[in-house]
Figure 1 (cartoon, rainbow, N blue to C red):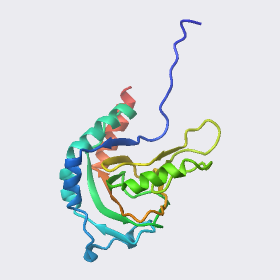
Figure 2: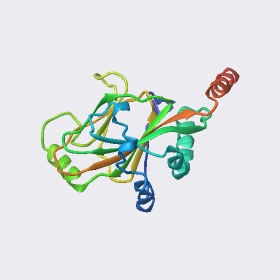
Figure 3: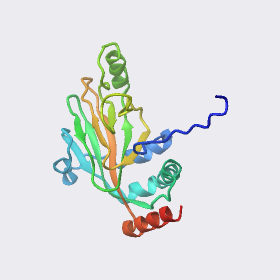
Figure 4: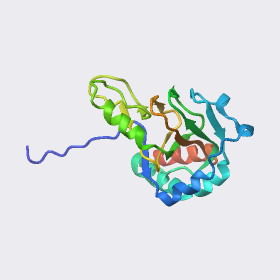
Length: 212
């Protein structure tokens, strides 16, 4: 039995997670403005009063290094050529007590959420939640769902993010955000990405698979 050669396989989608520096977060904060002329709530799934469209072109410039690192992670995870991507639309969410985002997916190929402000009060509210015998993520947390609930399937990933954390994932990955009670404002930037010359990219992937 000492010479067993075993393998295991990655199933499910890539969920990329990184922590940005505090100095970088200050740059993103300049994009987060409550501008009624850019009201975006009617385009979104969230039960959040204050959601506003932001400059996705500037956001792409600020995130270029992160996007390139995401592409490297994509290649390592899927063992295929990573696509070039560009941000198609972006918005800021100013979440208040009682607001929430129901289970939903996004348009495009990939999506992302960047935590601009995760107040200490929410972290403390989550610690209190952990004392309950409840199988759910805590107040203001985010959950990602893949696969089917039950058995040995690792179908859900829960996070209580801190300021500066960013997630990137396939746009069709179901996710949600839980409401909270603390009298604070939770600020996030969300955006969608599309693949540059997607048809050409898919042809390259199909050709490379035939050569293996």
